[in-house]
Length: 376
Image (cartoon, rainbow, N blue to C red):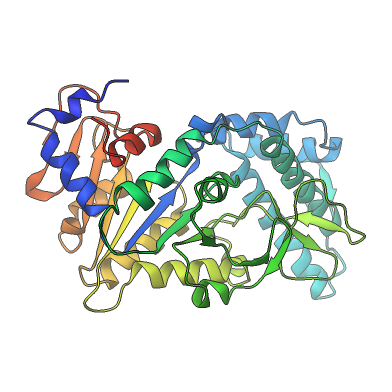
């Protein structure tokens, strides 16, 4: 695709201003599933379809999926994250009864009774299916490598070194792989190598050019038997201990899970990063995310209000104009000047907003990458 449109008098100043924002000393990215599509990974709907038909699921787990899907009838199509969140709700109810010594610990779902162990097994199967599906895809990391080069080299040419935070909502390892391939040192909370152990102090003590926070977990995170903290285990390594995958950080209704490591550490660092100290400013760039996780949206919104104007949110979205959460933020006079939206048909930021007659593709990860790299 040609980028000539972005060099026109109407758009060039906005693009240059965007690149200047991304050159600031304090920069963070929030990257969603849309950023992984260019690497040949499925979006959430596609992943959901593949998990539902995965041959690693038992008949009992398939029954649960069908029943839950029927429970969502009449609403938006549910994704695998909805299924898992629902299952975690069910599991929380049954395990709480079990902990209290109740006689009836099972829960009727559809026409069948499910024990805490049944529900835990279903969770393991679904998470395992996700890990296999994503892990077996031969990804193309070209665009992610170009993105890393743009952020850490092109935009920083002649400027002082800085550290960039990456808050990743995907389960894949594309950003970590791209950073490694481009020679950009990073910290992800683990010590060791391809197989490592959780060491959250490294986020604070390791002075690296980048930090990676897998807010929703990762396909290479596992829990070993009788160990409450995750390990990063390279694919193909089998251990004597039972291991189960840790993939998904439950959404807003799962308060209990958010208080446990590694997710508590991830969110704590996110809050710190988005509320810079006095005299500093932070830019949070959001790409590939549809603002469908109310917990994440609330964290950003709180940071906008608490940062006293020192946080700027730059969002790239495929809708023609800002909708939903973004529209509400832009309509809020207390924070509207801190929010900049690059939509499919224009740029929206207070009095500087403008609408465009034709589609703009700057919200696509691959186009944004080229623009940040200086391509015209």
